[in-house]
Image (cartoon, rainbow, N blue to C red; front, side, top):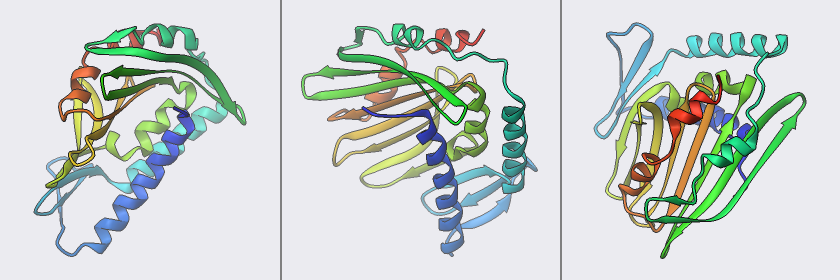
Length: 220
């Protein structure tokens, strides 16, 4: 499982672009004002999306980039501490692979740990990443961190949710029995779960067994 924190940021940018593109194409969607003046509500027959105004997101990104250029006093959490939060068992899943790393590009760095769990034909890959000074950008550009969305079809769903009180994005496909769950912890850590041959409820049940509060406390 090769996942890097930088990819998460890029995915957020592409997701935002995609969301805006689809909104402009669809004539069936209704855009209206929210009770919250900072939100735009996009409604259609099968989904409702609430998203911050684009100019607010742009301002937030600019502010975060200036903070990064000034330098951040935050030290990345040792990836060994992240590894310690990925236990040998998660419910009925048994850990088969376990590793951690610290990577950096052009002065930006991230510390991460990941593990692969197996239960019969079911597999679950779990990763935790400390994004350090880049963490604020995730909340600024990752679409799911700034919206409320519930898109359900005959074959699955894509929706925002919460896990142990933290904002998350969950997707699941019933035909392939695969799904993903991304969780933003303490506006600094990103947790990612990806399952194959799993039931619809398995992602959140497994994520519920992770020590997310301990993960957030590593930033102290």
